[in-house]
Picture 1 (cartoon, chains in turn brown, yellow, blue, orange):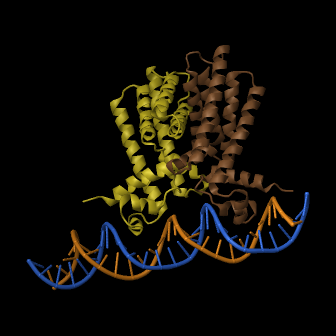
Picture 2 (tube, helix red, strand yellow):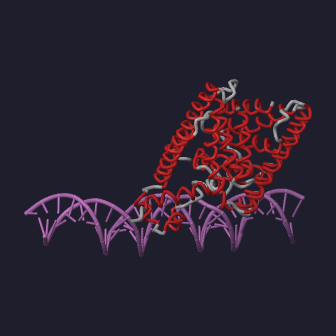
Length: 186
Length: 186
DNA sequence: AGAAATCTACCTACTAAATGGTTGGTGAGA
DNA sequence: TCTCACCAACCATTTAGTAGGTAGATTTCT
């Protein structure tokens, strides 16, 4: 049996990351999944509900990826490099970050969605801060850096590089920025 | 006499940077400027024309700002810090970068607009690369850095920080990232 | 200079299409 | 029998864009 709800989430994510939240419609999604517009409302009552579910799934996937990074890479800088490669996937597929797409909406974004985006960034910043502190304790990360500020710096650089290189330099250019970022930590 | 065209450009820019390109409508703009919807079409035949004019004005303003920075700051890192403060203005007003707003639209963005966005970034990268080279020649910028890669890195960081801190940490957090960025260049 | 023609900036009133969303169903399976 | 997943047919509103016109300024012709 096909899991329509999951298909809807997957296609909607591609659409939002590809053209922005208000740049996609239920009609687009209907066509992508092969189901009538009204049936989407059966799964997600409103567009805002869909956006919120999208954020939930996105965050859950990222949480799993962060755990996998901790399990697979002992070194702090290697962890941050692996974190950066999560964004690289977006560049390769020509898709931006879901949170960036929502953040663009700014004032017009429903409060729940804004809160979810803020939560996403807060979590990532906290994770990076912990990794950086560990790196400093082990000596692999420059002791002079402020972990809290540096964590924001890392997210900003990767988000910006994804946004820009998706339509400019592609994966190679993104990889260059990631390398420069990691070099600046040591 | 009031310059309606200029008012339209100013208000439209605020709207696009605040809520995204497909997140604003001629109706919004009509209300903001106090002119009928049909009259906007007199000044900008299509929404795409308006977006293109928006990019033109935005780029012209940035060009002037880049010249002013060269004239006002002899030191390379000071120039890049001043460049970063251009973005800070956006954080203070709660407005993202026009190019980031357009870039979010991705595939759905009309070709002319995409080309304009690419041109904007290319110009900024070239400007920064030249500034970085000069800094290396003078010894104020680390010689080990690759100017071309580092220029992309600078734009990515500032764009990402603007996108994120606009709704997260505000001007203080942005200033922290800008400081970390400048420190990483020396 | 004065009349005629043209242009500019704006308007009201429309259109076709798309938007998110609702109603009232149908058929299949537990 | 009841729920689930889906549907066709709606709906009100909003979207970008058009048609046709008006009042006032500017230019052109005599």
